[in-house]
Every structure is written in C-alpha cells, then in structure tokens.
Length: 211
Image 1: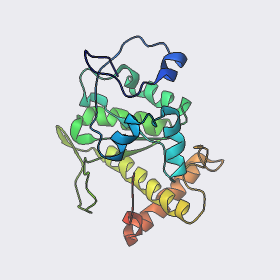
Image 2: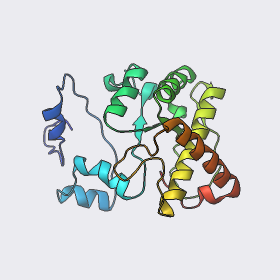
Image 3: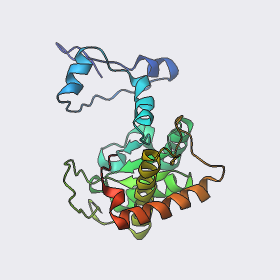
Image 4: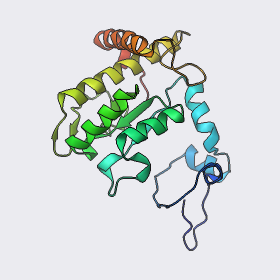
C-alpha cells in the first residue's frame, strides 16, 4: 500500500520487497468490513499465512486474474503464458477470471495459457450473495467462446469434486501442502471433472460451495 499524506498503512508485505525487485508500484484498494477491519487494525494480518489458511479451510489457493479488466494490464500478468508459469512457481494451480470485466479475446488468451500449463480456471460472475441464482457468464464485448466455456465448466467440476472429497476426509485436487494429488495430473483432473459433473447434476456439488 502506498503511503499518502495523513494515511498510515495497516499492513505491508515486507517479504515481497525482500524476495523480489520492485520496479514499479501501483496504489489500489479494497473494501473491508466487520472482523476483517478489526483483525487488521489489531495487527493480526499476515500475508505468509494466507496460503496456509486457504488449505486449512479445505480450499484451493486460486489466483484472481484481472487481465484487461484494468488498464494497463498489470505487468505481473502479462504475457498470459508467463503468468501461468509464475503461478506454478508459487504452487498455485488454479486461476479465476471475471469475464464481464474482460474482452473475449483476452479471456481466450488467458484460458489457453492456464489450461496449457495444467491449471484449472474458473469464471467469476461477481455474484456476491449467498442466494443460488443462476447467472450466465459473458464477456464485456460478447458471449464466451466455446473453449472458454468448456474450461470454466471443467474447473468448476474440479472444485465441486475437491470440496466433496475433502469433506469426506479424502484427497481432492490439491493436498494439505497445496500440491496436486496423483502422479498423473491430467488423468486425476479428468477423474475430478467427471466426479464434479455428477455432483453438480445431482445438486450436491452446489450445496455449501464456497470459493
């Protein structure tokens, strides 16, 4: 967080400046409410704990891709193929796009890069309520391509399967350390897609789902 006159940052990622060369900085923000604000003001927020926390909650560490939803595109995210490799280096095997913020061409480029690298990719719809309302994902300039729609569907199936397996005490898409489960990653992913599709069809894959 950049320092502004009269504004004191609540938390800074000092480790990032230790591990990497910071060539440019960008100031941005997010709205925090309730316990999130209290925790940060109390100094109880730690970047290093976030990855472990997601795993401890039975989740899958996932990178939220902005892509051309911002201008210019964040240097960390381009080109798309390089971003995919950066995520793998950080042991992140899932990514999310919010198509309504992006163009069709951009979504296709990132989806292709992620899937080629072996990551699963999902589509967010900015549906931030607990109600189960069916929404049709679409890009800012038109409908999703068939390739993107298929990739998003498969990613969603993997998440549904992962949640169901972890809830039952079994290994899901990633293990407790965040590494992919199974020696043959492609075969394992196909197995999870099949399981997740069956769960979604039965309605079980959407009960209590939380990304």
